[in-house]
Image 1 (spheres, rainbow, N blue to C red):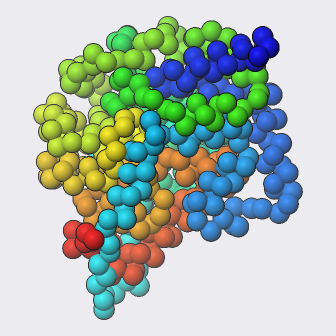
Image 2: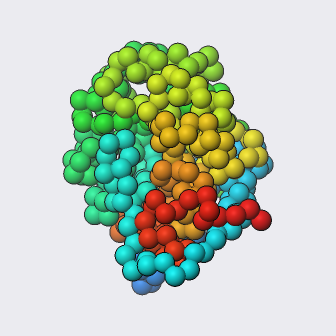
Length: 408
């Protein structure tokens, strides 16, 4: 192995060992990475492919794999360990079937709802995914414009490659702000104050990565990538932070993203410094749902980080009923992880979810076509949801209940 290859391997080992593997996304900010992303895509588009050619969300996944460098696609595809939780997320949907009610007037399908005082036209929410310029040069701005054109709620990651101020301007209205905790409370205060001043009405605290995760699939994809990653990521353990505008002037260190000592007191402290509503993301048990409720959470998101946080082997949809049963109607319950079809969304709503967040699918669309790709992903999923609502005799979201599904 020559010196350059050895240096590259050592650098990638450092990145993959990071608790969040956040550094990958800086590649979208360099001229070299721009060419890496646009070259294959330009060729593909030259062959006549367009967003309209995509028939379902999985078509976008195949296209994203063709377009993206191996390490970038691997970051999207990876789960933890041998992928048991990743697979469990999808298998959970297969254990439910839909129960159709006939002779119901579904000539008009209504997907409107109210969530934390905000009126939404759809229960399909754009989940926080960081560093979106790793997949397309316009990154979060393209996603925000798609969210505006299709009128979907957007949650912005605090490790975005674009500032919250720019994203809100592109979205045309405030977005929710996702927060990764660090062991430096001063960093949390600065981030939260900035989001609140920008107009975010909600902060979404992610609590499922405090001890890191073992993303083996990602490491295997990295081995297939022959690019000089340092040319994009920079050098040194703190280099990736330079591409994350929300961390400007915080002084945060890479080591501070490991927070194994965090307890529920963090939520109490968070609520004390902000007027924003606080949502807890990463809840998968009734016990933690109760703790979130007791510590003043305004909502929870049932999530295992898309199978990327822990090797539980238990799907997020499997966790949803016990969380819903625990909190009752006290606070809204949302869910993410593994959603690919309108029937998936329907099943979650029937289990008591107020809304469903999608992550990977819209990033596949972003990688393939930019804003039009994200729009097409949202259009397909929304159309599928409307179709299944009509098929099941549920003209509005309130009509989707536990009677709408059964277990095989």
